[in-house]
Image (cartoon, rainbow, N blue to C red; front, top):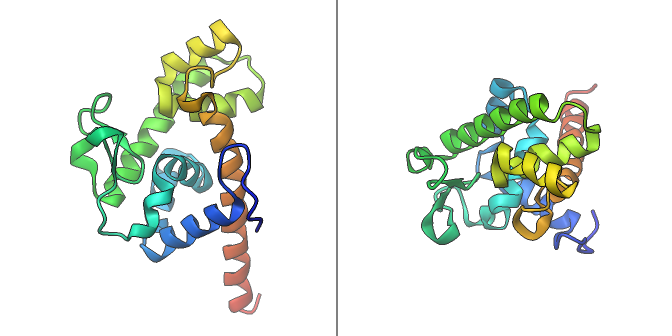
Length: 184
């Protein structure tokens, strides 16, 4: 893992530390359950959680993660301004599931309304929609040619795509270790 920070301000080592914190806090089963329930990949959900609150994961499983001046809650930073039930979903399992359901709903809308965009643009758009909503993301793309144009720092989707790659590799490495431990 590299320790050199990329254009988004994190290194692979930073994400490895977040992944280890998610494992030690007992959160990986929550990400797996949410992925299975929504059809999203575990690494996609880890990418969003990492972007939203990852640098706070080392605080421990009982640390209440609150951001955005108290408006956003939990690992997935559910914002009570856009999700009225955000405060009811602070517990890690419920928080990850609610965030995954929102991302999956946004993805379905974007796949219908942006059906002819290249796959790499759609991947960024799906992530950007977690930050700006499906409509805001679609309008950013239609008006500016970039689904990230109006996201936080103008790079939310692109950042999450890169995080997804790192988390996929960490998950694969864990799976390989598990198989080796079983003698496969």
